[in-house]
Image (tube, rainbow, N blue to C red):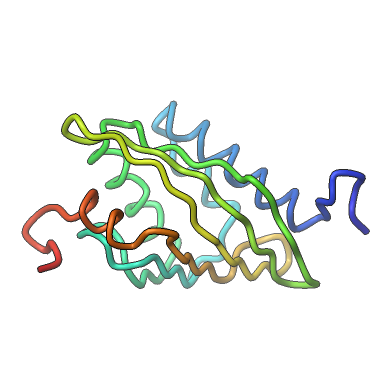
Length: 145
C-alpha cells in the first residue's frame, strides 16, 4: 500500500538507496552501498563513457560509481524525483548533475529496478538526452568514437 505521498515500499527503498549513495559519495565509503544489491546484480547504463555500459556484479557497480565521482571531482549527484512501482519493480525519475572540466551538466533519466528480498537484482537506466550525456562523459582511452 502506498503512503500519502504516493510512495510504496519499493519507492522508499530506492529513495533510501539514493540517500545512501549521496552520503557514501561524501564520505568515500562506497562499500556501505553493498547491502542494497545482490552480489551478481545486473546494471545497464547507456554507453556514454568509459565507466558505464552493461555491468555485472556489485563490485563492478561500486567501481562504476567510484569512477564517475573521480571523473567529476565528487560533484556527480543524483536525486529521486518520483517513483511508481509494481510488486517487484520500481521505476524512478532521477534528476542528476555533475561538473567536469569547467562544464556543468544536468539531466533526467528513468531508472527501472527489479528488487527481490530487499536487494536490487537488476537496474536499467534510460537517459533523457543521450547525445549531451555522451559529449559530457566521453573520456579516457576507451571513449566512444
